[in-house]
Structure formats: C-alpha cells, structure tokens
Length: 340
Ligand SMILES: NC(=O)c1ccc[n+]([C@@H]2O[C@H](COP(=O)([O-])OP(=O)(O)OC[C@H]3O[C@@H](n4cnc5c(N)ncnc54)[C@H](OP(=O)(O)O)[C@@H]3O)[C@@H](O)[C@H]2O)c1
Picture 1 (cartoon, protein in one colour):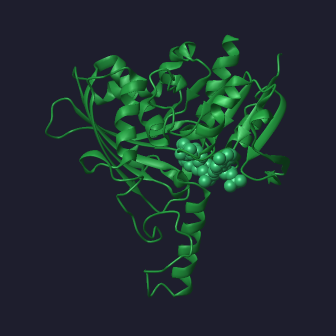
Picture 2 (tube, protein in one colour; picture 1 turned 180 degrees about the vertical axis):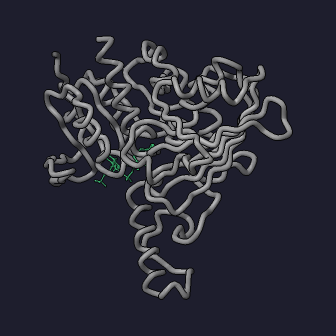
C-alpha cells in the first residue's frame, strides 16, 4: 500500500486529536511532521512526537497537510496554507478562513464527498456544530426535502480550544474551594467571554449581522454550501455549556413532504456515520459524556411537532474534536487517497 508524507499543524485541542485519529485509523503515513508556533516534544497516549516551529520549507515533500492552527489574518492557515500548496501538498484546513471561498470545497464525506474532485490544493473542514448537523439532516433532506431548520447548540468548552478547557477546570476548582457558597469566581484564564463553570452563555464567536454571532452564521452558510440547498431557511442560537467535550444540538426541521417518525428512525439507523440512540422509555438518548472519543454522530429524541404538520425534532450529539474536527479531516484525506 502506498504511504504518504503527512504534516499536522497545531497541537492544541484539535491537533492532538488529529495525531490520535491518524494512528487509530491506521492512516498510511510514511513520514509525519508536526508543527506549531514553537518547537517542543509532546506525548500523546504514550507516543512521542517532536514538534517543529512552523516554516514554509517544512512542507517540502509533504503530500497532505492537516491544519489545526488558529484562524485569521496572522493565523496558521492564512500564513502557511498556500506555502504548503506551492510546495505540492494538499491542505485540509480546520479553520474558517477558506470555508466560504467558492473555489474551496467544504466537505463532510458522508454528505458531499463528490465535491472533493473540484479542489485546487485547499479543502476546508466545516465548523464542528455544522458537521454533526448536516450528517443528521442530509438523509432526511434526500427523502423528504427540508424547508426550515431551527437549531440551538449546546457546545462544550473544548470547542473553544485547550485554553477554554483550562478556564473551565480552573473555575470549577475555584468554586469548589469556596465550598460552593460563592458561584461567581474569577479565573486568570480569559479564553471565553464569561465564566462557564455553573453557567451557560448564548455567545460563541463575535456578534455579527442581525445580532447573530458569527458561529450562528457559520451554521447557516456552511450547511447551505455543503448540502447544495440554497433555499433551506436556517436560524441558529449557539450556547456554551460546562461540558468538557461533546456538542449537543436541539434541531427542529420542517420537511417538504410528510415523513413519519418511524420512517425517519429507519432512514437514520441506516445512514452513514450515524448511531441511533432513541429509546426514551428506557432513558436512552445521546449525551456528550457517552460520545467523547467516538467518531459517529448520535441521534435521539426523534418526535413530530405537536402543532406543525411536517415539523420534526431531533437531538444530535457528537464529539466536537473527533467528528467535529480531526476525524472529519482524516476522513477527507482517506477519500483523497482512495481516489489517487
Ligand atoms: N476545538 C474544536 O472543537 C474545533 C472544531 C472544529 C474546528 N476547529 C478549528 O481548529 C483550529 C484549531 O483549534 P484548537 O481548538 O485546536 O485550538 P487551540 O487548542 O487553541 O490550539 C491551537 C494550536 O495551533 C498552533 N498555532 C497557532 N497559531 C499558529 C501559527 N501561526 N502557526 C502554526 N501553529 C499555530 C498553536 O501553537 P502553540 O502550541 O505553539 O501555541 C496550537 O498548537 C481552529 O481554527 C479552530 O477554529 C476547532
């Protein structure tokens, strides 16, 4: 079997998971280079990795570069993705910098793997909350159409990176140290805009057009692009909750054609990448702490709306660092090498 030279950029929450997923899925790696802002040695599950300081020539001879660095003007992807492409690599980027570029495919393999053939060197991995939603919506969309989606997300701390996980840990131990008498504490870590321990807040990303956050707009725009469904009307509210890893979503949809709940269960139980956990009588439904470390998305609480004829509710949970980031990126790489 042919083996590939692979680079991983970033060793934060997603980058470390990327190293884990490459190993667990036996991706055929010849040489692995790991880059971050600064060089050091790291240990992931007992495996040692030497991390080098990123530089353009580090991508010479690399076939596939998995980017999990920071976003924005001075971020890893904007600074180095094109340098990597110039040196012959295909870049799969986890950040938002290229997602809405019409020349860049935005791919969730279970939904639109065919878009990969249009790539010109860069492929974008969608936002974590978008990935799990489209894996759930697509099989229903193909059967009955979807006109309207209203989603509320409950997103874990690790979705905001390793700094946010540290902030949650620190706040939780400060509250415990206060004997739970004072729930308002101040951590020195300001990775999130509010205290997360013993709290939830409806603010992920920055406030943007129409008082929605940019995270909420990502759910709208990325879903339309991935599903090739420009007429679908989507509204989102994104909420940070004190969970370490695993995003949950309460999703309301209105289908074009009527579809029974039993049929939806049947479709989803046969859908790629989906695990159905829907036995409310036995208290079985997905929860983030059961899904941590898993690659699938989990769906439960499927029910019809009591008042709207074609209205349906779903509860969708996935590990934001795995299917929401690292696993999806590695699955894209697997699709690429299958076609090579
Ligand atoms: N967390 C999630 O659930 C999630 C899901 C989907 C997508 N994403 C996206 O994935 C990316 C990584 O997120 P994360 O949560 O892993 O962040 P993180 O925990 O903050 O880690 C960021 C990593 O990127 C490295 N880095 C930052 N700027 C860099 C640069 N200019 N050049 C090279 N390396 C650089 C950092 O290097 P040092 O270690 O040297 O500081 C660090 O290792 C972001 O674009 C994020 O939006 C995250």
